[in-house]
Length: 81
Image 1 (cartoon, helix red, strand yellow):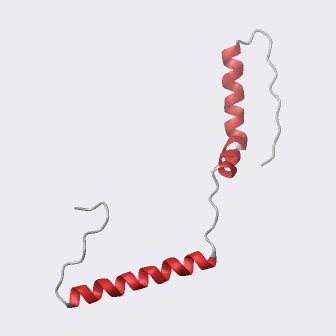
Image 2 (cartoon, rainbow, N blue to C red; image 1 turned 135 degrees about the vertical axis):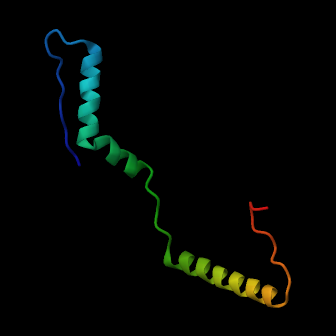
Image 3 (cartoon, helix red, strand yellow; image 1 turned 90 degrees about the horizontal axis):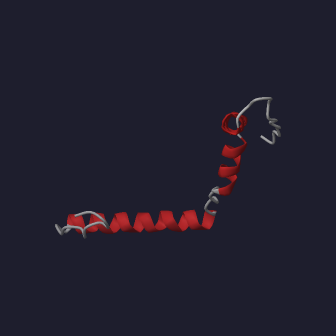
C-alpha cells in the first residue's frame, strides 16, 4: 500500500485535533503497518538448514526411544524442571 495523503489544518482547528486526524488517517491507510512488516520481516530458512534441523530431530527422537526402552530416564529438557 503505497498510498500518499495530505492533511491540511482547517480554520480554527487546534494542533491536537490536527495530529489526531493525521494519526487516524495514517492508521486507516495501513502505511505504518506495512512499514513495520517490512522492517521486522524474517528471512525464510534455507532447504539445507531445514534438512539439518529435521535430521537432528530424528536422531534425537531415536536416542530418546532407545533410552526409554532401556528403562533409563531421559535427560531433562532445557527450561523445564
